[in-house]
Amino acid sequence: MSPEDIIILELSSFQLMGMEVSPDISVITNISPNHLNIHKDYEEYIEAKKNIFKYQNEQGILIINYDNEITKTFNKEAKGKVIYFSSKTKLEDGFIVDNNIIKESEAGIRKHILNVKDIKLRGVHNFENICAALAATKTLVDSDVAYEAIKDFQGVEHRLELVREIDGVKWYNDSVSSSPTRTIAGLNSYSEEIVLIAGGYDKNLDYTPIAKPIVEKVKTLILIGQTSGKIYEAVKTELEKQNKNLNIYMCDSLEDSVSKAKKYAKPGQIVLFSPASASFDMFKDFADRGEKFKNLVNKI
Image (tube, rainbow, N blue to C red):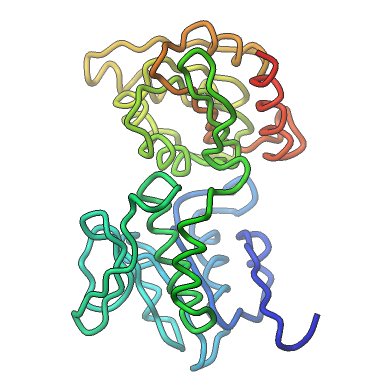
């Protein structure tokens, strides 16, 4: 490693909370409740996240989500340059997703960069991530090289990863989704009917927000792990509110959940393994969980 090397780090809140130095370029994509089994409350979690930019100087760059009510306000505390990205607002300055086109805005003039049809990734959250990546690398990488890299990128393992198609049903591994907001983003990435496998280790999170997306998008719900009861109660309340029904199955193991999904998934539907919970009740980590899911699917 040399002084000219560029290091990219993904830092969690409990890594950030003890830091007293910030990267030259910092990115915060979203903030929503997470790791509340480690932090004493949500406010401490937010303050920990801020350390990624609090110790920057005037030359620092902070990229933040304009659409998130918490991150939107961080510009008031930033010492350096702030770059926003958004999929909901036509910013005068920043990177935006507008009419399925990723654009860069400067003083109200919008430069078209990429049509989302040319991108292999699915979901608005991925288009927002691309905006953040473009903002972060603008001073580091030739723009044409960046655009080609984005078009060629097929995603990372365990994040909306297509495992295989069986009898007209596509199976996706989204084991990295360890909170309700991540699973909601996954659900919103598909237009197909969904068989959802969810549940896992309890991080003391509120599962109320996931209930409505499940009721609207999911045709069969399969629950495992410590949070299965929380998810079930939240969905049950939403079903009663909307006067709807949903087939829900409680399972004791990942093997049982995959078997149930195989039994009830219909051609044209997808099976989405997106736990909305951490992995530590049954697995070493999210990667271990995802690998076990893929192995089970590949044995069908």
